[in-house]
Length: 172
Image (cartoon, rainbow, N blue to C red):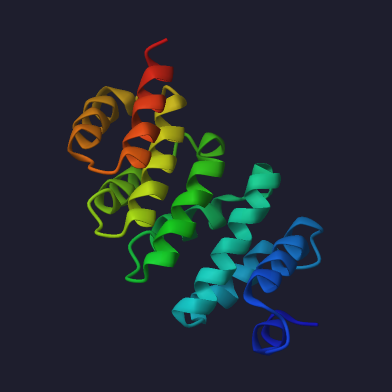
């Protein structure tokens, strides 16, 4: 079954599709660059499913992400669809430690998403920024005070907690 056939199959539930694509990536029966090429041309819901599959895969095996995948999710942080934004942020949170020298644009795009009206978009941006902060890179000189300010303004305690936990871990 190809990815196109899987996406078009109405008998398979969305979560199942995501799981299958994720498994194909992990067992290398679907090359990551092929999935990205497919996702780039897809409509938002399908693109989001592809990115979610990458998120599942990178949660289990962050090393399977390459520079192309990291650049792709950094770019898709700026898409209009909230689900694309939040799945992309989660991939960055899972893989940022592998690309510590390529975080500038990711950080910029994630900071924009900290002001999004959607709670899940803000939560996932907080997760990714928190993971980046915990890496203790040169970015922390500006990122730490920025995240402290964002956490003070954030009204959702669940999101505020992510920032405060990351901030606490960097000050140890």
